[in-house]
Length: 214
Image (cartoon, rainbow, N blue to C red; front, side, top):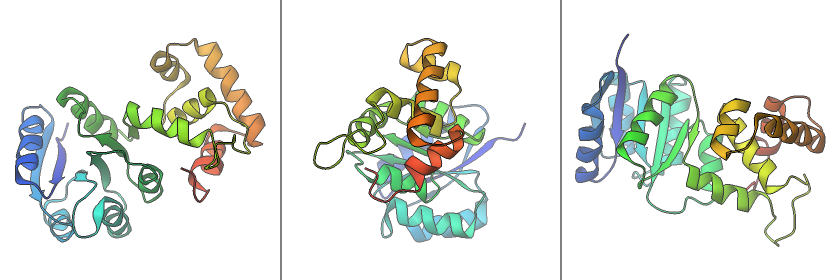
């Protein structure tokens, strides 16, 4: 099996070296380069052909979202995992909308970062659990504190976010410490409330096709 080729993009040398040390120690993962700016990312992606770009959300000059958007337009098959050191607010959904496959915080453990890289390489989408909890609180109410018109409960929002990451009912049940039957019940409720026919349609309608979601 070919190694997962990763390009690290961060404007801080120490952070790049730390991430490289973590990933270099893992079998099946190869760090093929380091970039300190958006422009270096574009150049190195063409030269080194990485599978995944692990990118700081604050990467100058375009930022993580701007760089991801440009990158996905030029190289659609590339996967991007964004990493942020502070509350990402609405930028999480923006990142997903422009094509990022992962969003994690800098407090992620080395072991979990490796899992994220492997999961994204396998076609998954990963959002840091802390970010999911923040999103659930923001998504379940409007800016005025009133419940959103979809009428989804916090638990239903949480399950919808896990569905958006490609998780199965069994995986969601394990993550949330509830039964698989309970997950299925919530999914049926989500589809009814959102007036959608399946999970994919619900995710697209509620999360990815709305403006001002968060």
